[in-house]
Figure 1 (cartoon, rainbow, N blue to C red):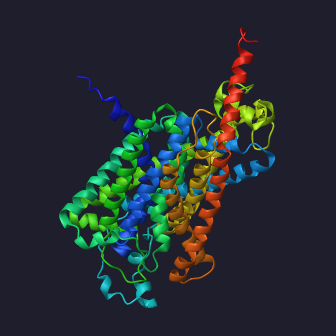
Figure 2 (spheres, helix red, strand yellow; figure 1 turned 90 degrees about the horizontal axis):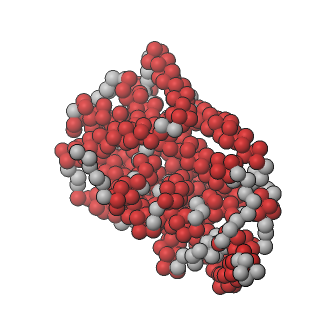
Amino acid sequence: MKVTVPPALSDALMWTVLTASTIGPGTVAMCSKAGADFQGQLIWCVCIAASIAWVLQEGTARLTITTGRTLAESVRHRTQSRRAASGRCIFAMLCVIGNFAYECNNFAGTMAAVDMLMTPSTLLLNLSAVDCSPSDVNRTVGVFTSEPVSGGGVLAVRQAINLLLLPLTMATLASGGTKGISLLLSAVVGLMIVCFATALGSSGVHVNVLAGLVPLIPEGGSELALAVVGTTAIPINLLLGSSIARSSTVAAMRRGVGLASSLSGFISVLVLLVGTLVPSRPPCVAFKLEDVSHVLEALVGPAGRVMFAMGLFGAGISSALTIPLGTTLALEELFGLRREEAAKPVRGLAGADAAADATADVTTDAITDRPGVLSDLSGRLRWCRWGRHVFLATFLGLSLIPSLLQLPTISIIMTAQIVNGLLLPCVASALLLCLNDARSHMGSARPQPARLNALMFPCVGIALYLASVVLLKRLVTAQASTAMASAVPVAAVGLVLLASCVYVLRRDQPQMLRTVEFATVAAAVSSSPALA
């Protein structure tokens, strides 16, 4: 019997790829660490991050639907001049840096899962007896450090598995079989989520965690707060969502983005609540993913540890396949390297595209000759034939180095999420400018209304504030309270500058639209034999 899925449900489920991209080792590590270190005090971070992801992903998808251009293509279209092309290169560099950090985090989480499966379970000792003296830390080094101590044979097998991830990932990407594998891995991640829910059902949740809905950054929690935001509202999802939206409608897109963002937020809160069950630790005892496996083993049984390790492995591999694809897609759209463009050099644009180019007072040939775009057909073909594969191999190979060096897993993951949290305001600002630029809309639709700007500006402001707190704490003052107070004017100045740019773009909108309409009519008249 054939099962028929309603079209509305099918369209919504298509967007859950954003949830699969979000729920990786970073979410598991950062949300569980937030629960272990600060109990429920950072639940508000997850809720706000899910809301930010909802608003920004809806905006980037709507940009594609209304203009026919993805976010990366809109940035490319807006930065055609020689002076603006450097801004596009910076944007591309930031995307690569953020995605590289995220890929390092994926492989680190994957190998942490391998370590759990290969090493025997070590029961938690009485942490209250730890006095954090040098002798005490040295005596318990195998239990309380971030990484497990492995024997020579186990270490050799671990490193061999780590090295095998490169050819296996490359082969999967080259064969185009990522969809089926990702679905299988997503099912494994689903088992981990069921395990989390079972553990919470067994232990219960204290009502005090509801106090975490009040926005408050605890002492020493600013970097973790930014990491939680960075792992829930990841910049790469803005680029992925923009590409998914090509074949969707606004109504279906909004249902799908709402479902994906809600699922991501719910699962992140679930992981954070499981983290609150981790026993409290002295300052000298670092949090590690093994602590979560101990909690699940105690509440669910030995199967809990295995399901957690398998789910973490599945989440890491699934994300490790998604991130390189998203990175190459963004670069191809930013620099005109897609296969369609390589197959046929662009000679001209018709309809609304031609009208938009007329308003910019440039020709297609002039556009393709400008810096940052490979107008040469042979250059595009070289990228499609071997350049793409070289980039992917280099990207993946470098991403394996931190896990090969056995750097602390939590340090790798937290660094990656902080980097993406710092980049989120940049990508969100670019999206906001594209949505308010009449030229980007090519005359097919007006820039987004003020009510949608009223939703998007606070999202950018919150991301900018959290990023400013971390930067000020690292570069200017070590006092968290001083950094949080100083970040307010910094974020305010950034928002004022962004609002000024939006005002300038929207101020030119009426004249821009009149020019587009005139150019469209002129193009229609010139192409009509009856009117010529």
